[in-house]
Image 1 (tube, helix red, strand yellow):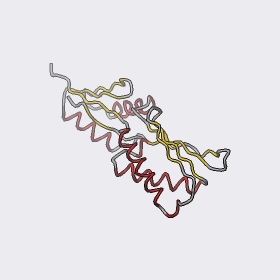
Image 2 (cartoon, helix red, strand yellow; image 1 turned 90 degrees about the vertical axis):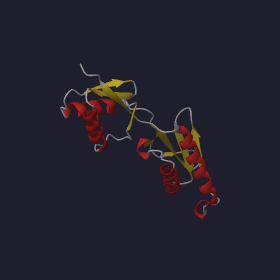
Image 3 (cartoon, rainbow, N blue to C red; image 1 turned 45 degrees about the vertical axis):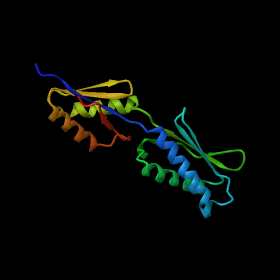
Image 4 (cartoon, rainbow, N blue to C red; image 1 turned 90 degrees about the horizontal axis):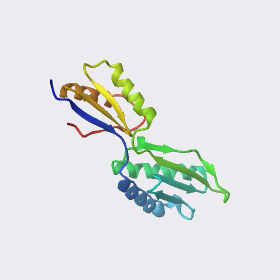
Length: 166
């Protein structure tokens, strides 16, 4: 009997890189002419995995989020894993938006990935949900590489990472 080969599908953001991107965005906002004199806050909560943006009006709020996104992209943090919440008005006449960082694959996305793999009816490929990741196994390495290529071509709403290839 052939030995089973496998790999894990995960998703997440490097929190240190997010912290660095937030600090860079703060510096750029402090230097930009169009943000001078405005009360803009950009806070990162590592424990909660979220970024809170507060600005005087929605236009400036969106501009700050765009600056943050460019800094995240430069630091190779997947912007697909950002869950940008709705605009909320604060009592002080400013607006606020919470950006949550998705860590791991949620159950709905994991079920969609497993369903996608099973619908392809690849020979002897098994996919199993293990916590916040999905493990795919098969006796053939070529088949596993085929699965990776298929998954890279599909959009599940988050950036997939393939690792632990054995």
